[in-house]
Image (cartoon, each protein chain N blue to C red):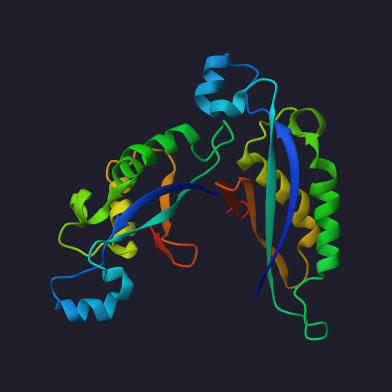
Length: 137
Length: 134
């Protein structure tokens, strides 16, 4: 069975490679490269897979999942400037793709246990753009 | 990794097939068979699949937007699907057929590094049609 929990966080970022010219950054990242940054209301949907525990009837304790997501994602990222305040985005460009990979790395070890694994991380940058990441294949 | 981008277009259509009698068409398609057609605000989702490149992207957003804009939106937005879309001539302007045409229009000559993985069209908030590209 799949279980999905959704959380939101709002953050600012700049997508630019500091080694490149402004024109090149604009060509690769569009207006996401604007140097002073801009923000999004990110929405994160985390999907776990596993069998419901025969005693509790749950795939995963939702309260624990909420705590993991708050500790690893919402608390450190919400209302922050990702490039300046949230490593590794001081050196890794905070594209939606790279943020999804970082979220996977942060939460996967805490979710994986007997009979349960992290299946998918879906990260919406806006309502019209999202990525799905299922880990290294 | 998969990246999905959403677009919108508004178009009119009428569902009617010459293979059936007028009475059968009315019965089969109901209100969608009303003679002068009607319209929808369609929601289009395009999904591409591929590794994250050295720039941290599955696909360049501007390149993807340009392809969808030129090959799909420019040809469907504010158009009459029965009249203005040659690929639909001879077939019914259902959203199933529309999804197939959108897939074809994008897949032919696709040059982006990420693979076209899925076309999904919502005709209304209640009816959605999805085509995986293999």
